[in-house]
Image (cartoon, rainbow over all chains, first blue to last red):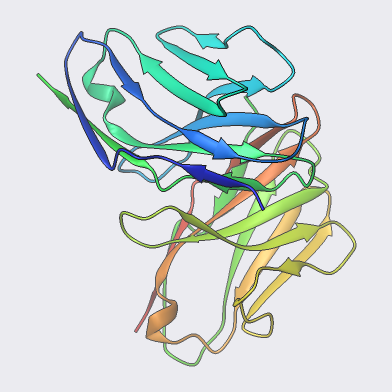
Length: 113
Length: 115
């Protein structure tokens, strides 16, 4: 079975600084997708960024980028120029053949002004 | 991005009654929808996978007779919590899979309080 591990329960970053959230996963599948979701206090799950495993190029969405290391099964999220609105719980997720998402435990990100 | 609407956002019901939560994909057809439960400060726990026109697939430990899931159309799945008890109080959230972009989008979630 696939597993997703987020080893940082909480992280803090100063406004305008850069922070990296870690995620590792375990799978025997060759074709899969990886996601980062943001869950603010409203509890709405917001898709931040998506990566296809077959693509070597790291995905980027404005201030959000990933470092996808397929061999190491690592998928970290970098947030540049952090803003107060970035404060939330961030979940790393894996989707394989079954279309089912497997989530990590989440990382609470606090942004200091 | 794609929109998934979940209703109601908050519901309070009496112990022993049933409550239904709806999940709709507004601008795409979702052959597969998922239902999750989330406890405070924890990750999402998958309860069941709902496929249009067929029976839902429940995760281990989830009571299928208590959490009835129906996926009657390509845009609507419902979760009915039957004979609700206070321990069923929780945040329930649905998601829908779209083959376009191979992505999963979430509803806004529903807070259920059983009194």
